Length: 166
Image 1 (cartoon, rainbow, N blue to C red):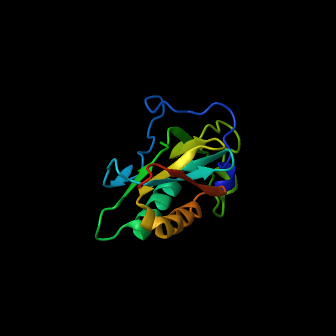
Image 2 (cartoon, one colour; image 1 turned 45 degrees about the horizontal axis):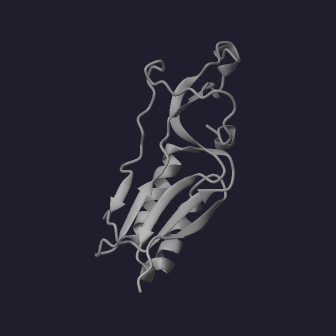
């Protein structure tokens, strides 16, 4: 399967799993990690700068890479995946071996079988949210920059100050 065929979603998405036989499960291990608290000082958001479809494998890769960098002995962060892959992606697999010219059907009945799930993201949508204390800012920025490199579109990091300490 080629990634550039599925990068931009065109038309109505297929989202109803009960109508698609054999649709895959979501491969995101967990949507939140860290300690949820009310006293975090800064929230960083990984935001999309393009309209794009992101497959669940890429979302999980971004989450794992951010978690590896930011996680340590102390649980002074909260990482949250903000999107959910609803859209079912289909592929019409073709035989590409010797003698396949007599077995292929070409475009006849080319609906395809479900192969993956994706989330449709608009410009300005938040992919990952990371809440931290002020002293962990450089590590958190590096974590979200690495996570953004795993995704198919250019991303930017936005910073929101939650609380001010006197």
